[in-house]
Amino acid sequence: MHDMTAKKAALGATTPHRNFAKYHKLFPTTAWLRRKAPKNVPLFSFEYGDTGAGNDTGIAHNWAAFDAIKITPRYGVVVTPPPVEVELFGRRYNAPIGIAPMGGPSLVWPGADILMAKAAQRARVPYTLSVAGGATIEQAAAAAPDVFWLQLYRFWRDEHKIGFDLVRRAQAVDAKVLALTLDVPVRTTRSRETYAGLAHEFRPNARMIYEMLVRPKWLWALVRNGYPRFATIAQYARPGAGTNEIIAYARQHMGGAFTWEEVKRYRDKWKGKMVVKGVLHPADAEKAVALGIDGVWVSNHGGRQIEALTPSIDCLPAVAAAVGKKATVLLDSGIRSGQDVTRALALGADAAFAGKSFLWAVAALGDEGPAHLIDLYIDELRASLGQIGAHSVAEARKATIQHPGAIDFGKASVLRTRRGKK
Ligand SMILES: Cc1cc2nc3c(=O)[nH]c(=O)nc-3n(C[C@H](O)[C@H](O)[C@H](O)COP(=O)(O)O)c2cc1C
Image 1 (spheres, rainbow, N blue to C red):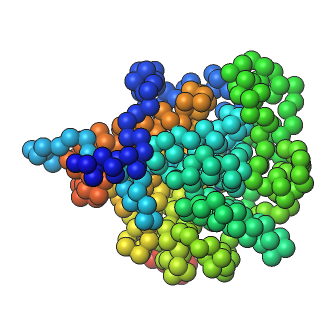
Image 2: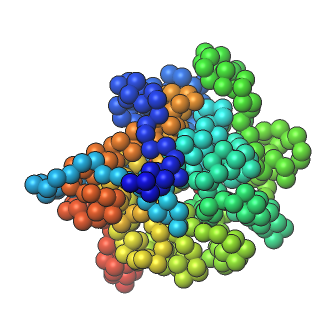
Image 3: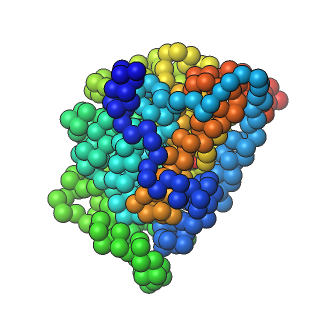
C-alpha cells in the first residue's frame, strides 16, 4: 500500500484539476470546445489551428475513419474504470495520451506552448514541442521536465549544422524522446490559413487587427506573452530577430523530409529514444526499425498536408503488425475523445496523441484549457475501457472490434501490380 502511494506520488497528479467539474458541464466533449474556440480568438487564429489541407476533406476522412470503428463488448464481469498508466520508452506516464507537436500554437493563443507543457507535466503525460513552436527547447523543457519530447523538421543547410545543434540542445535538457517528422516533403496549401492571411508571413492587416481588438481575452494573452515567433530557431537567425525575419530564415534553412540516410545520421548522433513521425506504410515502419528507431508515430499530419492521404488509424493495424514488439507504436490524426484513444489502443497503438483539439481547448478556456482537455481525455478513456470490459490499457487489445477501413497492404500492392500490367 505504502509502495503504491509512493509510486503515485512519483507519477504526479492523478486527480483532475480543480475546475474539472465546472468546465465539464460547459464542455462535455471536444465538440463543445471547438464550438466555443472561435468566439474567444481572432478568426485568423482559429483558422490557422483548425484548418486542414485543401477543402478539409482529409480531416473529415480522419474523423469518419474513427467513427466507423465499433467495439462489441462482453459483459458479466466486474469492472470499474481502470487505471491508465503506461510505460513508454522505459518511462511511466499517467495515461497513453500525449500532446502532438505543433508549430505556431501561440498564433492560436499567445503562450500556448508553455501552457500545454505545464499541463502535461502536471498530468504526467507526454508533451512534444515542435521545433517551430513558440517556446524555446530550454523553456519548454523547464516547464515539463519529466515529460518533454522534441520534434524536429529537417534543417539541411550546411550539412545539418542547425539540425545537429538542435540535437545537442535536446540532449542538454534531457529530452525524453526525439521525433523526426517525415511527412512534410513539400509545402502544401491550407486554404483557410491562406485566406486568413497567414500563409506567407505574420503581418496583421486591418482586418486581422480588428479581429484582435474584438477578442480582449486573446489580446490580454498577447500582452502577457508577446508576439508569436519560432522561439527555438530565433537564435540562429539573429539575436533579437523579429517574427518575419525568423520565418524567412527558417524557410531558407529548413525543408523537405528526412531521407533514410539522414535518419540514420540523426540516430547515430542522438543518444536517447528516437521516433519517426508521419509513417503510414508498414514497409516504412520496418525500414525505421531496421535503422534502430525506437518508435513509429503513425500520422497523416492531422489532414494538414494533402487530403488524399490515408487516415492513419486505417494504417495502424498493418504498421503495428509489421513492427511487432520491436518498436513502440504511437498514433495521431483524428483523435477527438478518450473513446478514440481506446480505439487506437485496441488496434495496436501504445499511445495516442492529439493536436488540434488542444488548440480548441486553449482557445475555448484560455490558460486552463490544456489541463482540462487532458483530464477530459483521461476520464473518457477510463470510461470507454471500463465499458468494453478492459481492466487495463493492455486489455484494450482483447476487444472484439470492427474496422471496415483497415488497409490490407498486401492486397493494395497486388491491385497496383495488376493495374500496372494492363
Ligand atoms: C497548428 C498545427 C501545427 C502543426 N505543426 C506541426 C509541426 O510543427 N511538426 C509536426 O511534426 N507536426 C505538426 N502538426 C501535426 C501534429 O503534430 C499532429 O500530427 C496532428 O495535429 C494530429 O492530428 P489532430 O490535429 O487531428 O489531432 C501540426 C498540427 C497543427 C494542428
